[in-house]
Length: 96
Image 1 (cartoon, rainbow, N blue to C red):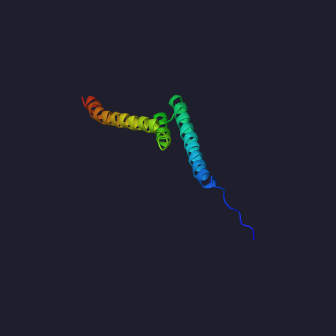
Image 2: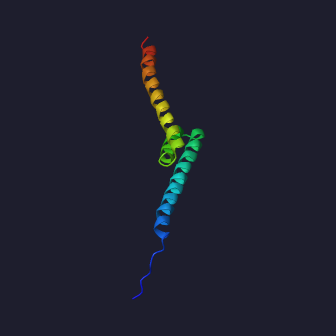
Image 3: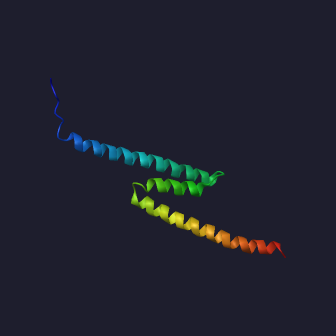
């Protein structure tokens, strides 16, 4: 009965490979989502929201993308708040 002895480096390389594969997968998924969002800026669709979603995906592995996504989310929230405040003023114009 022959048993094989695992090499000393084998356990250390598997987690490193899976970390690398995860990082590459997240980079491809996030990058393609951001690219689709950029295309949707010119085409009809929610381009800005798709870009923020892509940056959020990238933010799982890359801190700079996380900061950009957080900044974009803050800008989106302030735009929605401004639109809500402005909607009351616009409604008043039509009541004249």
